[in-house]
Length: 144
Image (cartoon, rainbow, N blue to C red; front, side, top):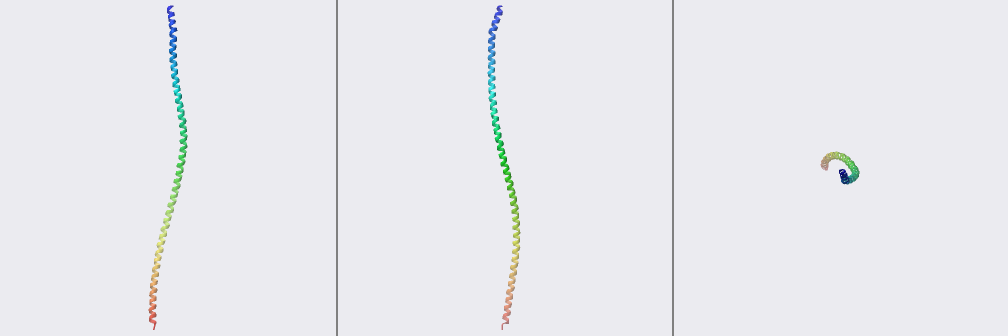
């Protein structure tokens, strides 16, 4: 019986000590788990903030992309208009060059005609002078 009392006393003393150690371990584990939970919640909050900021930046970039696309479309339209005008000016230049060549050919033709007429007038003037000289000679011969 003494042994039983000693055993019961020993159990009575060891059991609260063991429970205290277990509780402390559980308590420490609980605190560690709470700290890890709080850290994970903070990380989740940071990730959510980053996600929200990224979504805002994505919307801004999408808007900027739309504006850039509009500008690119405007530049393409402007370039096409300039190309059309350049083509039109090239056609007008070619037409003006053809007209200038035609006018130059006509001027050359008229200059040749003028030269021919001038030569003819000179020839007629020479004939007139010869005729006047012949008339004058005849008049002098006919004078008594």
